[in-house]
Length: 322
Image 1 (cartoon, one colour):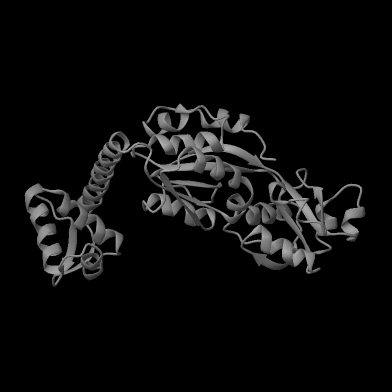
Image 2: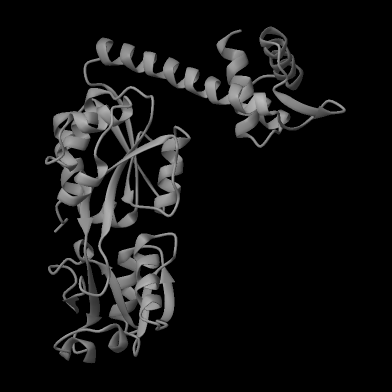
């Protein structure tokens, strides 16, 4: 068997069992892809795909195992290439970071500036999305690392290490009645229109959970996709917002005011997520260290190597992102 055969199998699965699409992606002919799959089936002695009149319908039970191993082999091959680049090119390469708007706008600029000065030969790319999209970019190999809040999904192919805790605040226009309250309650918040995030963001489902536990229903008038859009509508008087405290900039948000709401809404964990079984280039490790200098440098590598890491203890000690 060879790498081309393994890639053919994995790409067919990735493309939803569409042989023609897999062939286009790999710049090969459809008969060529079909031949490579049959060759490896004959070599290992099992049928990988179930077919009907030469059309692939599903993976067989054995096929699921074959694909799992093939993906790991291809990842190991990519790691070998990265090792070669590491030692043949002095801190030169590409680093793709998948993150949300809030982190790209508020917690990452200083880190990226410092990284660019330290590694001028590395081309850094930011890809934005919601937390699930960011994690899926890393799983698919379209990003090297994701920096996002925790998601409602788990990923077998990712190692996620908590690095910061995010607290929440109420954001309101200057002079808004809510700002006169001596102590905020969910009952008082439920009396006002709220601009919030969608459920795909932790800021959305944390708010929903808090109100649901109290037996209340928030008056959500708009679901936005990033903190700046949310604040723009709050400033125009559409409602108040519940945001991560880090997303408020007193020098730029001069027409807005905040009130602490950590007693109403639980904090969220901000994770650094990397694919398992991949080689970390030195500048990726440096990027993580710049972003979370308190995190022991070997923790991520240990987790990726299968060494048992006490994530519960790490969660207890993560600092709050101010």
